[in-house]
Image (cartoon, rainbow, N blue to C red; front, side, top):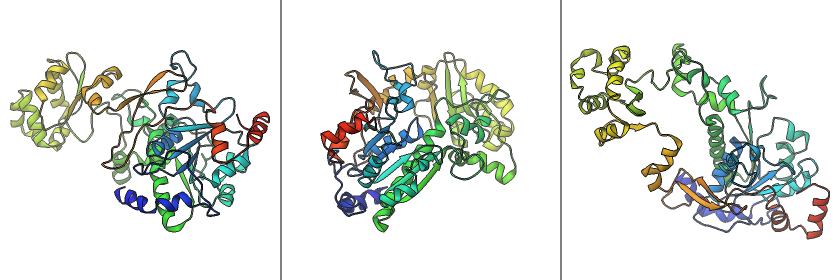
Length: 429
C-alpha cells in the first residue's frame, strides 16, 4: 500500500483529468492531498452490507461516494429496525456501513442516461444486483464500458456469473451455510450457529475494496478500466483457510469445536467466577507461563502435557483441570494474575463492556457526529491508521436522496428546469 500511495501522489493529476474524452471531471468533495483516494469518484449502486461496507472504506480513504438509491424506498437496510435513531425511522443498521456518502435517488430503468453521464465522470462503479438484472436495464459492464471505458466496474454477487447457483439471491448466512462456516461454528456436538455479525459479507466487501485499489493502480499504467467480480460463496470458501486445507490435503472433515481450537491446547473460553476468560497458548513457553501464573507448575513435569502435540492428544485430561482452576477467580482477578503474561488473554465482553473498555476509549475508535435529522449519532471509525495518509469519518450517513439536486447540478451541470422535469417524471427524487 505504501508504494501505491507514493505512486498515487505523483500521478494524482492524471487521475483528476482522465476520462474517455480527456475532459476534466471535478470531484465535488474538498481536495485533500493527505487522503489516498482524494479525487476518485465512486458510483455506489449497492445495498445491504457487503457492497456498502466496501464503498464506505473507499469513502473513509477520501473517495467521493455517490450512493444511487431507488426512489421511494432506497437501500433496504434503511428499514432494518428497530432500533432506529430516536424519534426517526432511520435504522441504526444503515448507519453502520454508510458514512462518507452522498445519496441520490435515480430510477435505474428510466434514468439510465443519467447513470451513463455519471459513469463518464466517475472512476469506479460498484453494484451488487443478481447477475443479469442490470444488463437487462442496459447498465451491465458491457453497456457501461462503451460509454466509460476508463471505469473500474465491480460486481458483488452471491455466487458469481457462472455455475448452477448464478441466479440465486445471495445472503451472508446462506453463503456461510453452503460454504461450510456454519458447519464448523457452534458448540461441540451441538447445532450449527451463524456468527454474530455478517462476516462473509464483510470479508467480501474487503476483498472488493482491495481489488478496486489494485485495478485503479493498474489503470495508471494502462489507462483502461476493467470488470471485477467478487462473490460471497467464493469469499467464504477462501476464508476456510486451515480447515479447507486440512480437508483438501488429508481428507480431514471439519467439526464444531465451540471456542476450543483443534490444533492448539489450551485455546478456549474458560468459565470464571463471573464470566468467561479466553486464553490461548500457541507455544510451549506460553503454556509454561500460564501454569506458573495459575500455580499449576506441577503439570509441566508430566510428559503428556510437555508439548503442544501431546496436549492436543491428551486434551480431555488437561482441560478439566484448567477449567476447574479458572472458576476460582473472577475475570478482573485473572486479569491481575495475567498482567504481563507471554500468552494472549482477554475477557469475553458484552457489547457495553466493549465500548467501555479503556483501550477502545484511548484509541478513540468511536466517533460522534450530527446526523442530517439533527440527532447526535455514534459510529465506529476506520480500523486502519496511516503515518501520513488520512483515513477518517467525514460525514454522517445521508438521508435518502439528500444530495440528488447537488449531484445533478454540480457534477452533471443540469439546469434547475431539467432537474425539476426529472423529478416530475419520477426519474429522480
